[in-house]
Image 1: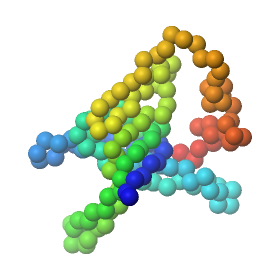
Image 2 (image 1 turned 60 degrees about the vertical axis):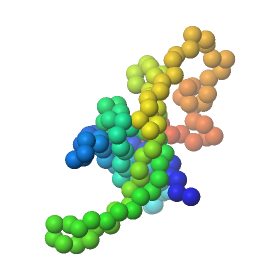
Image 3 (image 1 turned 30 degrees about the horizontal axis):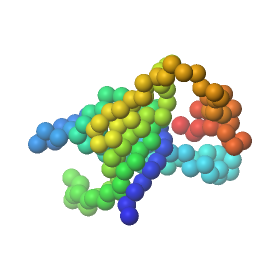
Length: 152
């Protein structure tokens, strides 16, 4: 089984590129909070991610530095020769699904992208019966995860 699910923030704006055969590809790095405290300080791990084709195009269109996203994909290991002749090994996440986890302004229409297909949920005209802890700006399970508490 080869499955990876991570939630983090982009460390810089993604840049869309085209391969020689015309496929779209975008690479981005996610900063993921480790939730471990070393000497009272927070730490993060940085994971390189790659998305292809329509998924790549939508990631480049909708994401930017600091965007909170969930990535569902698989680990991939590859190697290449550097210009100085050394072999460089890379372990990356191949993003098969990207979910945008923040509301943009007042909208609930943040797109989910799975294999290049974008779907949004239309806002409902019905009022919710009760709000979740997140909607009430209260910590869920006693854990405060507001942005000012994250290391990135």
